[in-house]
Figure 1 (cartoon, rainbow, N blue to C red):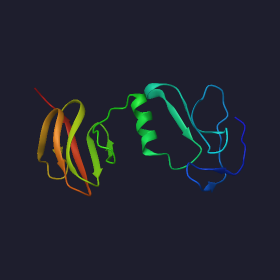
Figure 2 (figure 1 turned 90 degrees about the horizontal axis):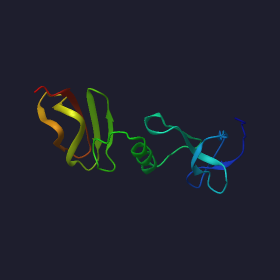
Figure 3 (figure 1 turned 30 degrees about the vertical axis):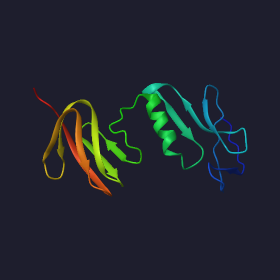
Figure 4 (figure 1 turned 90 degrees about the vertical axis):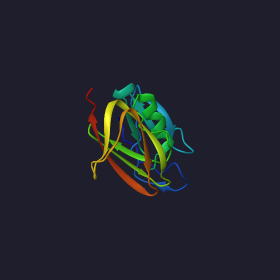
Length: 145
């Protein structure tokens, strides 16, 4: 698309530059630059094939959560504020408050503490207890019958 440079505010009150502003047909505008009609957050595609572009920094967590839910991304925990990273074998959860969580797994799995090897549970819903201000690394393996 066409590139335009101009001073534009971010989601807050301060400004930044330069800004790349999307200008293509078929984009779904999810957010605009404050005080303008310029798109700031756009999406194309659907579900797991969705692509999101932001021309400004500091996208609120709630926006990411809504986009992931709309795309059908699996949600392992329901607690706001926890930071979670997962792949097919490992799951890392960082939490400030700590406390009880129920891991909601996409398949029946055995969940182990990746550092100690201790088995924490088995199933698609596995309760765990997280210490405050911690990062817990878990290993997932397929549960055999």
